[in-house]
Length: 137
Image (cartoon, rainbow, N blue to C red):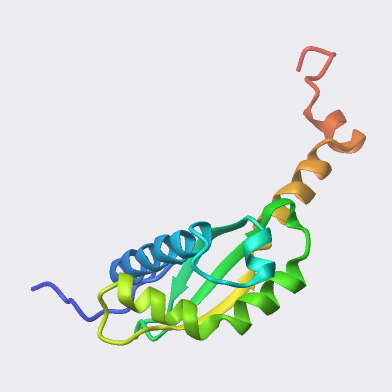
């Protein structure tokens, strides 16, 4: 007998959380790219929305964003927070949910982490370890 109410062990949450997160991500990306938010900061910055994580009850959406080039992150976060009610309403009109999720905006740190790892891999010590042994082993 299948159990439908077990907690998900996947890192991103249940299939429903992932699906709704992706719908919210697309909605927010469309709203920002189409200039739907009339804010001078948001109108002058290209903002990527790589991920949205939903809470299990789908009432909270953590929206990970990154301005183009990683510049002005604090200014962009403040502008998004100031326009949160408008964005939340626009998302509610685009995504059919019982409740409009509360939005929490965070900077996506994965780009910086990937760059740090890339620099680490290029260091002489790591390059030396990656070279094949010259003694035939």
